[in-house]
Amino acid sequence: MRLLVDELTEEIRIDSYLAEYMQSFSRSKIQNEIKKGAVLVNSKQIKPSYTLKDGDVIDIIPSDFSTKIEPENIPLNIVWEDENMLVVNKPSGMLTHPTTTEVTGTLVNSLLYKYGDNLSDINGDFRRGIIHRLDRNTSGLLMIAKNNKTHEFLVEKMKAGLTEKKYLAVVKGIIEQDTFTINKPIGRNPAQPHKMAVVSGGKESLSEVSVLKRFKTATLVEIKLITGRTHQIRVHMASIGHPVYNDTLYGFGKMKIKTEEQVLEAYKLKFPRPFIEETISLEIPKDEKFERVLGFLSAEN
Image 1 (cartoon, rainbow, N blue to C red):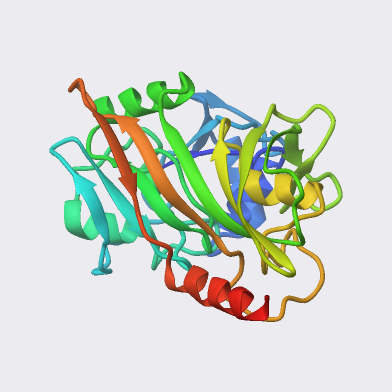
Image 2: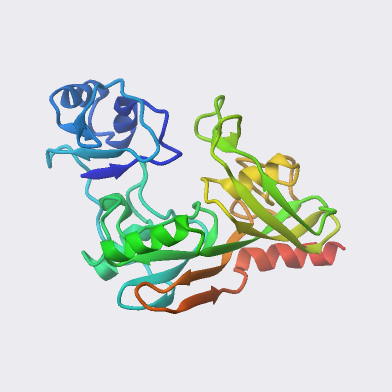
């Protein structure tokens, strides 16, 4: 089994991480397996105290010391597809891929049911086909790679800035500026490791914000991501005093209409089609959560 470390996992001891990940094994059992060489990081043997870093690749060798991700017949909303990739509209409430505590009901479980082994495996079995991701309660467009060659192509284009991702968000309060850029570094919150934060020495993070409509107590904005850090939009908007509507992790205060967490949607996506000189541009309508909140805010004005 292979696991890829990201920004939410880094800076955690590997024995602690695996103890949470594989709850059927005790921490002492995991430490013994690590000492025996059954767990490798970047193809090298490590100690149980090793601190994980973003981009580390964890390989767990014995088959009896792993967790299998099962295919599940969960409907997929496919927006666009060809022989190399597809784009899905992930609903709010669904995890993009399994985590340390949840291995069912995710987008990956659904993809495995429909496509089986016809998905990229560069990022391991837990992230089959996954190139980028959305938070559980953020809905919208996600690219999925059917093979490793396509996966590498799309990652390269994203790093080169040749893909474009735009989000809609309802944020608390009235934003006076029509357009502006947030340039603040993001890293793990030192006081609350399960959260991200604007921190000195964090990774460069850029978000371009455009106001679409102002309401009495909130603002509808479009946000273009220049970088793609974990929780970037939510952290950036909270940092300027305009958290995403109903974001209980980074927000503050009570909202008048409740939803299942943040009102945020990845609604526009532009990318070069793999191995063909064509640019694909996609846009989806606002989901039910958005329409409900916007209807409430319009009536409040």
